[in-house]
Length: 114
Length: 112
Image (cartoon, rainbow over all chains, first blue to last red; front, side, top):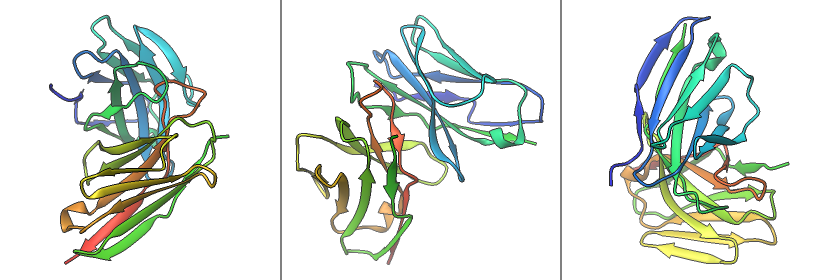
């Protein structure tokens, strides 16, 4: 099976712009989670989608949003970019059989905000 | 709240064993995970342990869980230079489904 894929791998944006990142889960996986990784804060959970519905949300401002499509692919959007949004954004998919579901991560999208 | 802590850095010589430690706070965590991250890459799942287990061995990897002390460790036998990476401990909290809480990561440096 192909792994989790994320596009694009690298992005450079300027403050105030918006950005959309894409994630394709492992075939058959129904849950997609997003994480932000920064040197200062480490890995932080953004949100999780299952069957096109947001099931969990982390402690991030409303500028961060996402969605999931019927084929389980997911996108996350960040509006009005700030310098502090520069990070590695990681997507993970899981079969979603319940608590403790093993998550498999993609290579990430490196976002730089200038 | 939920919190996972790890030491930040470990340096070993090639061929030695490495032991990376982690403590967590959510006593109802069902699964605990170890992930590996190489420079510029995503997270690679190494192994996981279910909370009703004390130990799990997978080739060169041994995971020990002390549920009473909420302490998890990852032992890498015969450490190689290719094992140099950041290792993350993560717990699956009882409050959420596919949500992981990660430690800050332990950088393992293996010297020849």
